[in-house]
Length: 181
Image (cartoon, rainbow, N blue to C red):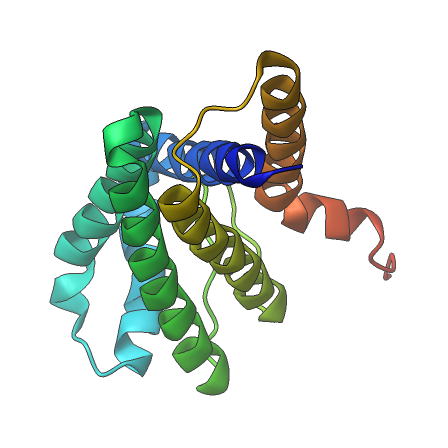
């Protein structure tokens, strides 16, 4: 796999993950409200008041929607990756602060469905996404060439599989959790 395929893999994986995250929260008022409310304990741990939850939620959702849009177009790829890099650093920092403070909150990263409690796995997922986004940034600078059809299909297919695993990580890990009384 060369740099064009790596860049495409990163574009598709980051684009799919952020598109699903944004769409899950934009599904309706309940989804947006659940996400905004889930931010309250995390913001509190960072010393930010409850009233900021709606503007912060709107900014995060806007960024999540803008990133896949930028990654769709060759002229926006590097900017899209750099926005993803910045957003993932902010999200990772917020998660780290919340986890260190022992915050009890639910992860509503992908919408209104009942979230699982924030845990180290969410920070790991964010770290994996950051590695992919930074790799994409570097590859976009070095590989402006579009890959051939067969390598592009393979890279995009692998990226979709990777995105699904990252999106469904909580559900996948729940399959292996011990069943308690």
